Image 1 (tube, helix red, strand yellow):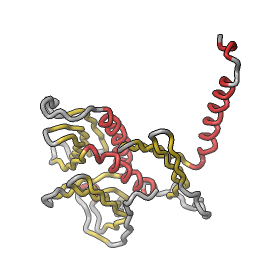
Image 2 (cartoon, helix red, strand yellow; image 1 turned 120 degrees about the horizontal axis):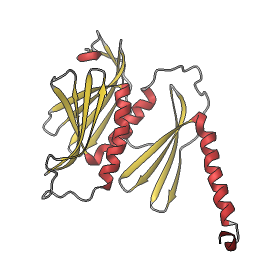
Image 3 (cartoon, rainbow, N blue to C red; image 1 turned 180 degrees about the vertical axis):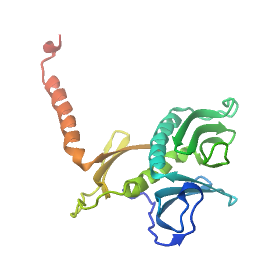
Image 4 (tube, one colour; image 1 turned 45 degrees about the vertical axis):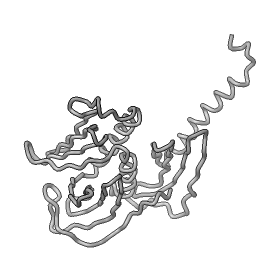
Amino acid sequence: MADGREVGKKGMAEPGERGEFVASSEQELATKMLQIQSKRFYLDVKENRRGRFIKVAEIGPAGRKRRLLLAMSSALELRDHLTAFSEIYASLGPPNPDNLPEDGKLKSEIMVKENKRYYLDLKENTKGRFLRISQTVTRGGPRSQVAIPAQGMIEFRDALTDLLEEFGTEGDTSQEFKGDLPEARHMRIENKNFYFDVGQNCRGVYMRVSEVKSNFRTSITIPEKSWSHFRDIIAEYVDKLKEHSDKPPEEYK
């Protein structure tokens, strides 16, 4: 589904990152840029001798740059947390600057990956609501962090999902589908839009089903090998409801 965001593939070598990703050279596989309010975010998929990882860079309106690094497994877990944080944010009422939480926190989570800790805090201050993601590399070590405006969490999550689906797992591509993939489909039900997009990565063919309502978007991804089972479950529900709807009213007494 076209959404104005592009993935740029590159092949240049760059200096190694700090920490566990140190290597003599890196290759940048893809990048996505998001403009969220007054900030720009770059999500770069990189690869070195230790494997693939994602570098997230935040550039503020004054040009100040912050960044953090995510192993692919950490990025996958972060993606799931972003869904949960987005749902909580969507359930909140309008901001109330006169009644802020004592510590500013609305929800917090911690991710632990080997020698790294990631602190996720949905916060609110006089400027609005945002998700702060902080990373510590060693015990008591300095933190690196980025802050995502709450209104952009869904867009950030979807960009991260796109990169994970294409680069998240280095698998066997011998079973790669060689034909043309089905075209995207769309349907509208009341005030909701549903989009069906079929894609392919190193793990095979998948379908992403997205629900869009106003400015809120959520999606699920279904591997091609599960489509038939997914269809059968829905068909079973349809048949059962149809069976009940065809019965005379007295049978329910």
